Length: 605
Image 1 (cartoon, rainbow, N blue to C red):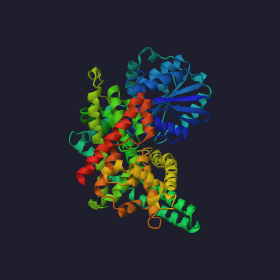
Image 2: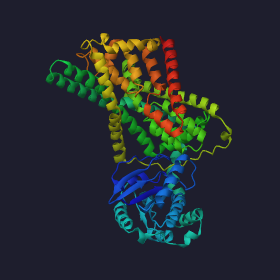
Image 3: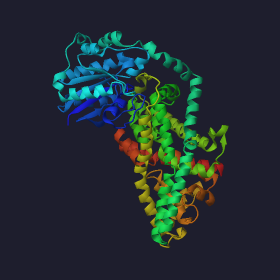
Image 4: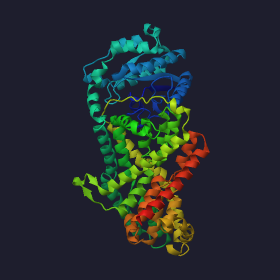
């Protein structure tokens, strides 16, 4: 199958254009370095390959180096028909530098090039129009004015792209006068003739930035936004969580009617609804977290947040760019570790990757939510805008960030070399403020819940099955005299200093496969004990069991720090290339988690 290569600089609307061409709902984010992998999709009879955004063919980071190497190979490949180069119409000069470099290589490889002037709707707002035919003559390649957001010019591009990709030999790059200049000179010349004045476009952006990047007001706004982020996890998700719990309880009630008494009934109710059901209740919180982070990404605020955080982060040996992996890590550590490739300094990139697992990812959410629901009363202030349980969420996430910063400072001292004197300056493009594109955003939110269930549910099902068998036999549901109790009582002395019994000890050990298994294991065990009381309400069962405040907070502290994700360990191994770093972090964070949780329990108890 012939390929169309899609390239462009970050923040140019390239990913959204890819979505419009292929129909795939790929992630669209409005900050530099979000795309660190190749994305592919079908357009007509062609395969479209979306390459990571880059500013130049001279790489400044590991991420750009990978993208450029792959792009060079793709442009030379015989199956490549067309290079589709996406330009930001509002910042044409910057876009053209990279575009002209790409066009030169395409010409050397006898490949056709098509340019898209994206975000043309922004220019229309300012009554600025570009003569695409004249610009096409100057560039020696076809040019289409489009808006991937409002669909202006998309049908014309699709029709033209199909025609060009079918007969690329008829649309090879033509020699023009502008080719006599280097890429920098040519981009300036073309921009002076065709581009809108930058101060017109940036006028509104600069007004907003004067507030959001203010040394005082900007910092306060950032803290308020972060507090609101974690408040929303409880406040917005609460109705969906209640509905999910009620639905699980209703389904469990139906099954108890239609399945007769016996082992089959106990398995379905205790293992399926007790284990999987207790976990599913917390999926809405993951979707809300994805929604809020998506709003920050698409609006352009994340780049500002990175700029605000650069100075305080630099005190710990990090870069402002570390903020993006850190915030992404609150959804999942794996893409966050990959996002660290955008950090130019190898040392700062290494420190960021090593500390990203301390960010409270979505897998921790069910654990936090369960323990907070047990220990913290549901008290609301300011008309429901501030929730005491949400405030506890903020404390836990802040504790994870604070721990990451302390560990970063230690690692920075340990890895300090002469490189610290040659680090490149912190440079970050501030994208324009834009309203989110709602369809991809809501798809992303829905997909986050679906993917989380797909990833975690099989593990939890298998673990719940094993836990149920061990806890049910040999005495048909007598948990205290089961095989599981024997195993649990063997490991209980390890966790007894935290004030928890063998049931929690088993849940902790098993959750080293995946953190969210903690909820499923407890759900299964407490369902066996309380099968006739509260099938889906695990929090109520834990409250009735008498989990103490000291033990509960110690458990939360443990889960904030411990690295309980095999996939994250594997990703660290792949990115660093060394087993000792990946497994060293796993062991170190496990020991640190135990020490901190023991200290917390000792101080509170």
